[in-house]
Image (cartoon, rainbow over all chains, first blue to last red; front, side, top):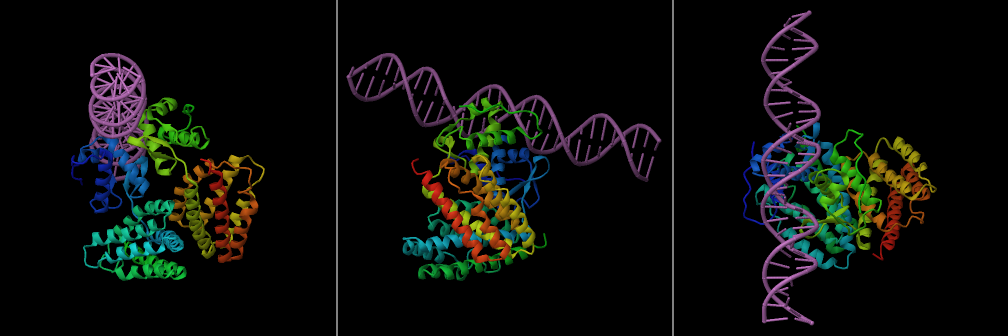
Length: 219
Length: 219
DNA sequence: GACGTGGCGACTGTCGACAGTGCTCCCCCG
DNA sequence: CGGGGGAGCACTGTCGACAGTCGCCACGTC
C-alpha cells in the first residue's frame, strides 16, 4: 500500500502536491474505503515530513474523503446508501437554486450558450474517469454560471463526497452521465422555463441517487 | 492584539482548544476583518507551538472565517453585501429542503414538537450574542430534524460564513431573530403545508439578507 | 485451559529549529 | 536631492524528534 513519490518540477508547495497525490490515490481506488491512513507511512511514501502529510490529511478530512476513527486515526471514508440519497437531495436543492439564478440572471443567454458548449463535450465514449470529470465539470459550471460564489463553494464542498459515492458504486456501464441527461437542463434554461429546469434537475439527481445508492449497497 | 492563554483543565487536544479560542476571538471581534493572523504571534498568545495553531488556522480557513492572502498569510475574512445575499439564498435553498424533508418525514409530529419547544426558547430579551446563538441553534435543529446528515453538514459549513456576516453587520437592534419570525415556520410544518413553509423560509432569509447586507455596506 | 498482567510496538499529539522568501528601510552613490 | 542596492526583518514552509497513549501479544498463574 503506497503512493508514488512527488515530482519536484512545479512550484507549488509540498503540501499542495501531497494533497493532490493523496486525493488521486484515494479516488483512484489505491486505498479502499476503511483503509487506515498512517501519517508515517504516507510521509515515507511521499517523501515529505509528517507535518506536511498531516495538513494534507486534515484537508481531505474537511473534504469528506477521509474520516477520523479511534484516537484521531484517519481512514478512507465511505457512504451508506442512505447517505448517498441524502447527498443527492442536497445537490438537487443546490443545483435547483443554480438553474433558478441562471435563468433570472441578465446574462442568461450567454450562460446558456456556455452550458450548451459544455454539454456538447460530454461524450459517451470516453473512459469512465474522463466521463466522471466531464460530468462534474458540467455541473460545477452550472453553479458557476449562477454567479453565486457561496453556491459554488457549497457545491464544491459536496464534490468530495460525490466522488466517494461515485467511487463506491463504480458502475460506469450505466449511461448516468450521458449527454442526453443534461441536454434537457440546458434547453429549459434556454427557454427560461424555471419549473421545467428545476424538475429536470430533480429527476436527474434522483435517478443518479438511486443508481449510486444501489451500486454501493453490498458494502 | 492578543488572546488569553488556554486553560489546561479539560481533556481535549490543544488543537481543539486553540481552534475554539481563535474562533471566539474572531467572532467576538477581538480581531477585525482584514487583520493579519500571524502564526508566531498566536502561538505565543495561546502558549502552544506554531504547528498547533497552524492546524487550527487551516480549520478556520475551511470554515471561511479566515482567508489566505499574499504568500499564504491569513487574515480575518469579511463578506461583501453581494456575498451576504448569495449566502442567504443558499441558506434558503438548504433550509427549504430541510422543511420539505421534515414535513415528508414520518416523524413529522415529534419533529414539529421539538421545533415548537425550540422556538419558545427564542427570547427577544437576551443579550445579542445569546440571541444569535439561539437563532442559529434553531435553524440547525431544523436541519437536523430533516434527518439528512449531508444537509446538516452543508449547513454547518455555511455557519461560519453566516457568523461573519452577522458580525460584520452587527445590527442587533433589529428584531431579525425574533420569535415571531420563526413561529410561522413551525406552524407551517405542523400543518404539513409545504408551500407555505418553503415560502416563509424564503421570506425569512430574504429579509435577513437585506438586513445584514445593508448593515455591512459601509465596509 | 482461561484469565490477568506486563512489555512492546505503532500511532498520533506537540514542539522547537532551520530554510527560503518577499518587504522594508536605511545607507551610499550619482 | 533622488535612486539603487543591500542588510535586516517578519513571515510561512518544512523537517526531525520527543512524549503520551492505546492495542496487541506473550508469558505466567490459578
